[in-house]
Length: 349
Figure 1: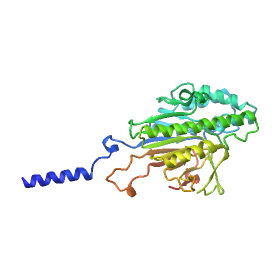
Figure 2 (figure 1 turned 180 degrees about the horizontal axis):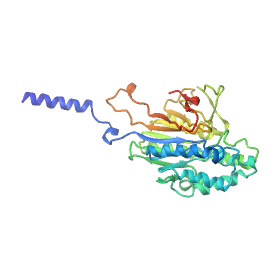
Figure 3 (figure 1 turned 120 degrees about the vertical axis):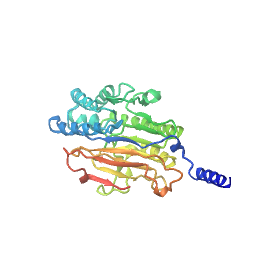
Figure 4 (figure 1 turned 120 degrees about the horizontal axis):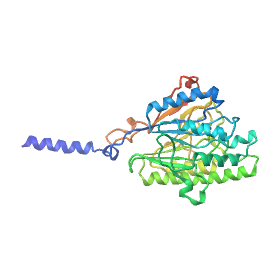
């Protein structure tokens, strides 16, 4: 009897010391997806084969989601409807869901070839964001800012969706920025006005994404956009940077303070610079690093590679925090038909 009582007491103590976390009780697992952008650059006869091979590699992984962060063509490539059709067909080659957010090459830089950029932006919206379904052969349902916020009824391209259980799941959102300075210094007054309106919409959408993540008790928030929002004194080795003027409202005034106060980690994925980067370069109003805000820049241009992103489960109560996995891990997906990706990677966890 005494032995049974002692064993029962030890069992009760063990259940207290190793009580499952909420995540463990719900069976929370890592979630993997793929990110890429700034491709394909160049004529389809030259770059198409390598791009198709990369898509095949991504499809072979069997992951449920790929995010393309814009610039699906070079800035001097044609901005015709035929080019848009070609890129839409590429997006439909992905066997799972494909979510896209526009880049400057896709509409703003069309003025280099004599096209009206705002007309091309509207053409993009009509072609790529006509419904509440993503692209890809197994699309997911997304929410559009235009449908949820009448004040921002133009912005069908700002999307959000959730992954996983109602609690401790993931919240994803895209917001539409373009390099190099979000078009706020464009020589056309109408384009500058569009940039100011779009950045106001972005700020509101980012705030809503954080509110949704808090409401759902999310374990992480993943944001995706095209532009590099920082400018560096030394681009070869950035550790600190300043927010560019064109992103003051959306990033400096909305994203940074919200990430600084968030109870969950935040990942910002972007393109624009074509140099795969993982770091935490953002600082709060007190000039302190925002430790919970991670940044990952994709490959691009001649480096037609992708990145596999894993959102790890939250740490258990029985594991010391210093031995817990980081919230995000990143694995380059190397395309053998493109130059070595290690030539242009900066990893600063």
